[in-house]
Image (cartoon, rainbow, N blue to C red; front, side):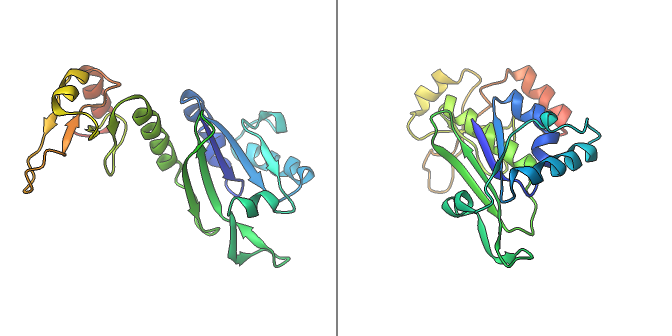
Length: 202
């Protein structure tokens, strides 16, 4: 997977390099400045994080787009926020591209609002989980939480596929579509340990 974002906030990807790398995700940033300006800017980033002041130490590439050609094509320009020259600033955009080179998710924040990288990692976990198993993740889901069984599986098929069990809720409509199963990536013991470590109910 790849995670492409505008470079107005690159401290997150640098600080969370191990988190992205452990998920097999490669990050890249898009900047509306030229390559020469990146050298000093990257040194500031690395110094802020108390890292060696060398461009090579940055864990991801920054794409120079001074003419805003890519930013325009990707819909990343903020028509309200302008720079000193009166040009539109780039929004804080995030694009997640899968191994099949297809767009899986896009987020667009105004230039005045920073990204939530915990949410970006949560989304990546969900995308990778649901790509491998016949489940979906409900609202506010986090790694280790229960998942929803996809409608394409019957309840009997789901119980065979998910040996840790399938919980079927009975809503007023009596339609058995609210079916939950533990995160299929973890054993029962691992799920309990994860919930305890994160301070969540198992």
